[in-house]
Image (cartoon, rainbow, N blue to C red; front, side, top):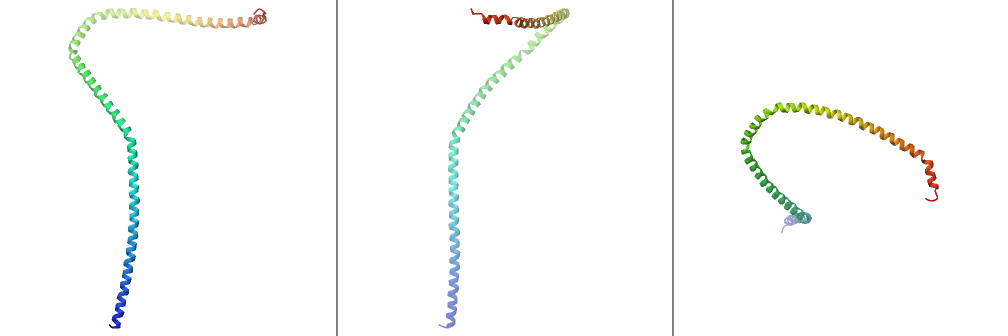
Length: 181
């Protein structure tokens, strides 16, 4: 073998060594990244599992309340359905009653004709009622005057009571000294 070939072989082996070192360092970095990615995926998986567990716990605590609310809502819908049946029956009865309305209108027309004759008598009665109202108004004024007189009299009696109480004070002192008491 020629020394030149040996040098080339040495160079080729050295380049091959550097290439292997580069491949090895790249593979180390790749393994390191892959390990970091695996750790990140594991942490993310733990977070997802914890979140799902927490949501399952929350859901299990909320389900009884939701079930009770749905049960109550169903009960209310049942009440509304019953009310709707009653309302439908009431509307049907109102419709039946409305069918008799033309007959009633005829009776009201007959009554109106009879009332027209009575309107003069009612007008006379209205005049008499106005006179009675005037008399009641005068009586009311008299009662108001009497009430005011009684209020004044009540104040005077209260003053007299105070005066008698004041004047009897010395005699009450004798009652206090009474040995037979």
